[in-house]
Image 1 (cartoon, rainbow, N blue to C red):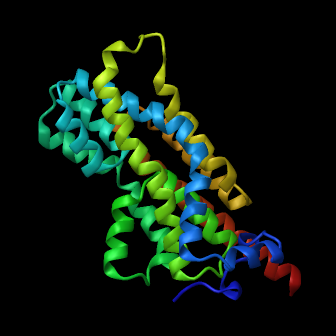
Image 2: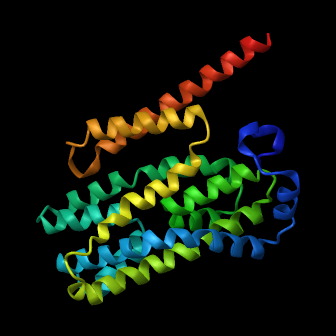
Length: 262
C-alpha cells in the first residue's frame, strides 16, 4: 500500500502545502523531467568518477567492449572499482566477483527502504528499478518521496526514471571516454576526488533527525575502525550497526515523547 500523510512521520514532509500541491499536480512525464533536473548537480562528481573508472579499467587490460559491458551490466561504481582493482592484482576472478557483490550488498538496504514507496509497482518496473538503483538515484528518490508522501505510484516512478536517465547514461559514456583518452590525462589530475564528494553530497541533506545523525556517526566510526578489512568488507559490518543505533535512538525518542505527553 502506498504511504499516506497519516502514515508518514511529521518530519518527513517539510514542504509547504502550496508547494506540495504543485508537485502533486505534475504528470509522470513532468516528474521524469523534474528527476532529471535535480540530478544535474550529481554529474559534477559523477563524470570524473566514470572517467577514472574507464582509465583504471583500461590500465588493467580491459578493452573498450569490456569497459562498456562492465559499466552497462554492473552499473555500480564502487563494485566496479573493487573488481578492477582486484583483477589488476591478479586475484582469482571468482574472488573478484564475490568481493564486488559484497560491496554492492548495500543495495539490499536501499531496496528495503524503497519498498513502502515502490513496492506495489508492476514486476517490470520493480526489475527496472533494481537495475537502475545506485547511490545517487536512491538518495534523490527517497528524499523526494519523504518530502512528498502523497505522490502517486506513477509520479514516483517517473521521478526515479528521470534521475536514473540523467545519471546512469552519462556514467556509461564517461567510462568509455576514460577508456579512450585515459593515457592523455595528466597524472597530476586527481580524478578520485569525485568519490568522497559524491557521497558527502548525497548524505548531508538527509541527516535531518537525531536518529539519522547518530546512525551516520556510528557508521563512520565503525567503518574507520574496520578499514583494515579487505575489499571494503568492513562496510558490511559498519552499515547494519549504524542502522541499529539509528533505530534505537528513534525508538528512545518516541518513548520520551509518549512519557512527556502521558
